[in-house]
Image (cartoon, rainbow, N blue to C red):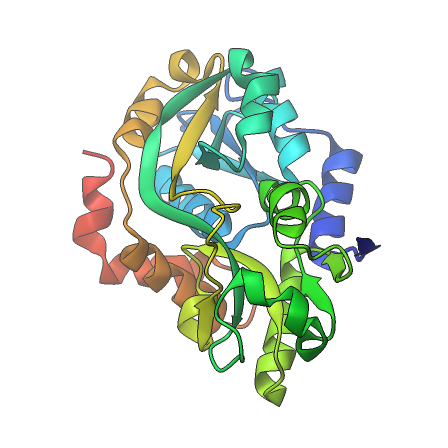
Length: 296
């Protein structure tokens, strides 16, 4: 398998910022405003559902009197930071498959808070009018897809699953597996769809791309991508003690895929920018009863 590593500007900038500034102190160590309940530091992957729920909880917690700091990085540094206590919580842990290796490495030093969505699924997606419907047809039709599969970050569980299970499972070793970043993958997807070209990308549900583009998932008769997964919140070893109120809210947090898609659509489809505060505020006003229930 030939692999080309492309670094997305967003992912690179986020990781560089983390390296330059260092991870923020946890709530128990941070300097607080006198009126603040403390600073909650959230580690965030560069995955759209994580960006969405992290900014949602940022707005909720700030409304409730907390300060919030968000640190964005690849999964490895995020799990390391959570285990070291540099992050207080992470809101997008995929189990039992995608992030299993990180739980094996760091599980003794972090605390599960609970699953908030049980409809997650890793996929290999193509344009809906593509001439194939199953992964077992891809190798014979690789040339129709530019002989490549467009992936995301090197440290993502989806990347490892594609490399270790999907590619050998379906004899795709001769295809070019482009390991890049989520923003870079979405850019290639958008370009191909606008041109009417075939494209195969590593993707996952829930994701706003399924609302924005006419896509279909290739069938996985060998089950290489695993069954449906759940999305969990995790805390540092001291999170429940440091922030018992917030920990309680996250333990009870639930958000189905339809509701998540509506937030993602507003943030990533209807809005072209990265200052999500007013966009999230608008979504909250449209879903006020649901949001109010998250802190009861």
